[in-house]
Length: 411
Ligand SMILES: N=CN[C@@H](CCC(=O)O)C(=O)O
Ligand SMILES: [Zn+2]
Image (cartoon, rainbow, N blue to C red; front, top):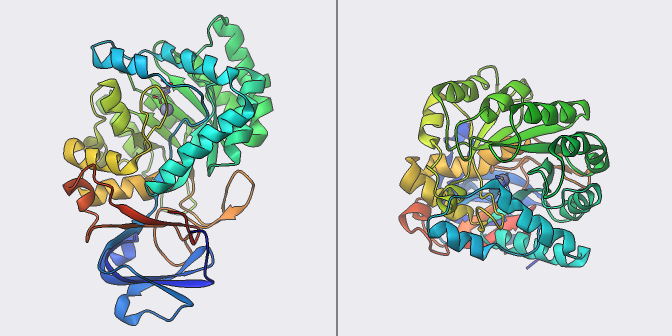
């Protein structure tokens, strides 16, 4: 499973989704050559160069591995009872996070790491080749640092979410001082971004602004959980702060949508000034019974959209990006191509990983992810289907049948 030939030809691809605009994004009867960890060649199967090894796709569909830009995988315990209560009519509330905080603090490093590795392996089997995860179930200096260090061994990007909720028994002002001071200092060497849950019951506008400002002073990128349970300032604050993304977005005003779209006005697709990605989390919307985020409206306005799983034990206990893509198509009004693009290239842009040379938590430079093009990291998934359309046409079916990450077969 883990053997990697120096070069590999994936031949006879029935439909190849490249996300490469120059080539129209979808090729028929295609082939891909991988050399070491990168894509070396993409084109018509009839013109494919020779390689050391050959994999026959036999007319099936190949697309970039999923880029899941929003998960919370460092935790212990589960919240089945809370889920059952919700399905019986209770509303989701931010306070449930403290149940997982208690279980996580009580867990050993080894138990947390085993659970994290298990969840990442599950995601890989589902076609996810790039995955971000957040801290946020420790909420003490030591527990947050521990989560960041463990996460860095298993995922592609680690985000500090000390501002997840005020832990049980803590004074809100004192906790905010801790999060924006000693806790941030302790965790900063191990993360690439800072997140804040801007919502009633978590952190209000002033507190969110403080967290974002502290992150900027520390030289870290930012993300915001915003507009999840009701209208609020999250999306606007994220755009104003130049955050990489704002995530959830079930409750958006016209001004929020315009701000998110407008943030991309000057982006040339390269290293120039970029905007704030609108990341929608369809599985979470369903599991918390809030309105599905207005993905169609965001795209039509010109926003850059990502789809992520938000895998966590409270609001979205699934890492299935295929499920999220199917939901985005069947219930959020996206085409299959739009949904696949948001779950691959959109996630890559939300992580700043769509460009060559982005750094993983070990500091190693990585090839661009989210597209299949020469020079990109060789992250691909093969479907047991002739077209990516089957992801929505046959929802819930186990279509992902082979996965390569950095040129290595991982599923
Ligand atoms: N909204 C905040 N955080 C998580 C939920 C965490 C939890 O309930 O445990 C989310 O993205 O949905
Ligand atoms: Zn989240």
